[in-house]
Image (tube, rainbow, N blue to C red; front, side, top):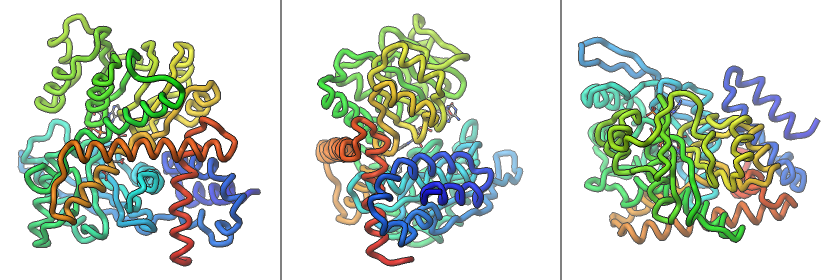
Length: 443
Ligand code: NDP
Ligand code: 2IT
């Protein structure tokens, strides 16, 4: 058996009941097999065995008191996966589905994504099975305070810098930052996605969605096309989806769908983003309210946005939300490109199918790297004790995304797999981390 399959079999045997982690490890390891064959030093130095094993996995009890005076208990996680190229960096997910396997898949992906940004950040992820939906501000505060009263022991501006992800936005980051500061007495850049009044970076809120669109525009440009005039479908209606819709619309595309966990909207006239922002960002409401703003739009609780004919698809909700039958529908409808705002939204067989059919498929670790890249820019500004303008940060973000496309495109070609951006992104992300690990010895 090959080195890659030996390591994958060990991952499956040693990490039972973690299907998402197995899926992420398989995708990365199988696509870098070519590099591993070319470089016997990786096997000799057990790079794969080391890269699939987190540096440490922290799990803790998070007790908090709800508004009725009842004690509630959630589970907290931080998986510090790899710090070969910089301090641990990655978001905190608050969603009832969170478990160790999901945090490990996200932390593993983050290693390669962070490497692709070209910035000095290692890979980590954390979160909790706490559900912020339907909770009062006071309940969210008490949860965040309890969560950080344990997490603060393991993080720091030069150690591990968490940020937002599903369910963790500006409100949660603010409560966690206040708690960290109170417990440590340190005013330091320990979290990113902070508010603009206390060390946040302009353009961080927009960065993941904008970056997704910048990378897609570059990928289309390389194929002699552009977003202008294209019809786009988007899933999700959170941070990533909203700013992807905003930038795609600005570049002349027409976005016709968005979704949340209850249903999805189809607005043939183009999504009214002001309405979506009011529903989601201001009211913390449900997309079913969209009809109040646009009575002509359709709202569906069955099926999915992928049934709508489009040129470009942006999955921006969560993992495994686009299956093989969705991919077949997209191909039948002549989709040109699928670029992932979410982490691992496409099932592996669906991704293979898209690539095989010649669809330009940009995997999340490349396409959504603009968020963490701008987090790293927030860290730079915090270290300098300066704030850059929106235009400065946005220009840096755009350059980073163009550079990421260049790296994945070049590496796909180098290994004779033109337009296989899964291979290209994984190879480019992996080599830098592997070389840093080699240089630092068998730790
Ligand atoms: P938000 O919490 O802001 O929004 C998440 C959106 O996805 C909501 O519309 C939510 O619907 C929907 N969603 C979440 N979970 C599910 C589910 N299990 N089934 C159906 N719909 C679901 O999160 P973000 O926009 O920040 O994150 C979206 C994706 O992007 C995630 O995969 C995240 O890991 C990834 N990402 C985020 C980055 C960031 O900077 N925020 C950076 C890079 C990647 P509902 O409101 O009903 O729950
Ligand atoms: O998946 C991701 O890259 C994020 N949730 C953002 C991480 C970060 O540190 O900004």
